[in-house]
Length: 245
Image (cartoon, rainbow, N blue to C red; front, side, top):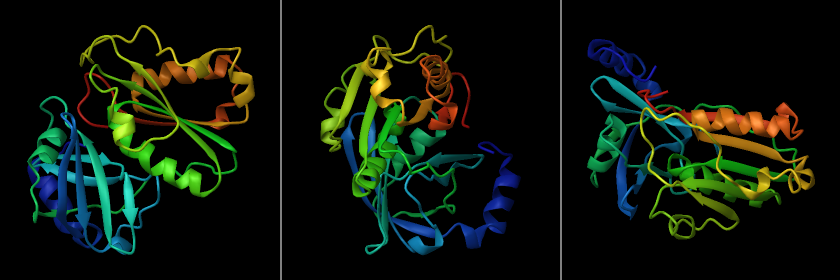
């Protein structure tokens, strides 16, 4: 539940204290004007992190938000979050304001495992999913799988994928920035959604994350192109006009 009355949020944080170990901020840098890298150090064994899973932060007295780590190092007991700082939401304000040495409670990881039997993987996402792209790229490359990211980014973000070390990606830029109440009338024009190209990837796994409205449209398009729904893994991170998911 992303938003709660303050008394209930206080009660949850106290009751779940053993499942919300405290981590220290040991790194805080801006990758771009909208992407901030924050590195946390603590007892990773208590979080039980798996690539693709999310952890939760209390980002205001009444709000919790989920974030997917971009990097995990069990030996150093650190993990990294690439936070999209956009608008005036509580999550953006929280991550923009974090400073070195700050102590932050972090919830245990949770999520749905992505099946690992496919040979090729495609992640569709936006600025909110660049951390997920980074960790899945490393994970699937280690497994000897093909991994590519389909990124739908705002103007001025064309250098972001390379700056993050993403290798195989296709970028489609938005003509205008997201409007919190906008109606999505079409899906981004990625090459892979071309009916003449998709058959070579018919056995691939498609991971759809980020904007929930675009996820609905792309899933419908993939199904229409003959992709088995069992090969589509959907994880909406946000929906225009809604506060938290």
